[in-house]
Structures are given as structure tokens and as C-alpha cells.
Length: 157
Image (tube, rainbow, N blue to C red; front, side, top):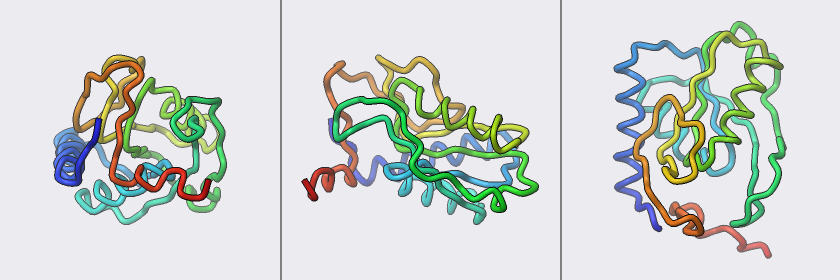
């Protein structure tokens, strides 16, 4: 299943509107790299939040699900005084990666609250929905959801 740019923009707008409607105030946005970088940019600009950092977390090797790895963490000084964090990713499949990143920030970085968001939720397999999302998509179990940035997957192989 392919997600097109116009849909990405629409889903990012929906996420931003839901965040604004919640009246929740975030100190920082954390983008989950690498696939969450474009959604992070769109959501942060829509919300007017310029305090943005990234974390590299991945549970996929190409298109195969593997074990979760944290590859790059934000520097602790970037999080000094931060109490409310919004995590952003492109998709929440099972919710495992997002929940692990949420727990990392709550437990290891001592933030008060962490809310989660994604452009898309994989309805069939999602066990833990994000707090804010653009679209819930029912897909076949073995059907991969492709974003425009996924076309570059495997170019170096």
C-alpha cells in the first residue's frame, strides 16, 4: 500500500490539529529517525515548535521486523528542563517501538509526560495506539505501507 505526498500532508495536518485541540503544551518534539524525520518537520512547523531533537530507533531490517535497537540518543543537555515531550513517527505498526521510546524518555531522561503521534496507524496489528494520529489503515498482515521516502530503502545494498 502506497501513501502519497498529499496524504502525508493531510495526515500531518490532522495530527497537528488534534494536538492543538488537546490544548497540551509541549516543550520539545522528538522525531524518531529515520522514517519519522519528514513527519516531525511537518508537525513541528504546523505547531510552531522549534525545539526539535531526534532519536534513532529501529525494529526493522529492510522490510523484516527484528529486535528494537536504539542507535542514537539525544544529548542530555538538550532535555534539561523539558517536562512535556511529543514523539513523532511516520507509522505505528504494533506500537512497540513508540512505547519503548516513550519509556526511555520517562525513565532515563526524567521527563514528566510523553505523548505519542504518527501519521498512520496499522489497524490490524496495532496493540498500543498513539495519542495523536492522522489515519488508521486496515491492511493485510503481510502488506507493507510505503511512504515516498521508502523508495530509497536498499539503494546501498
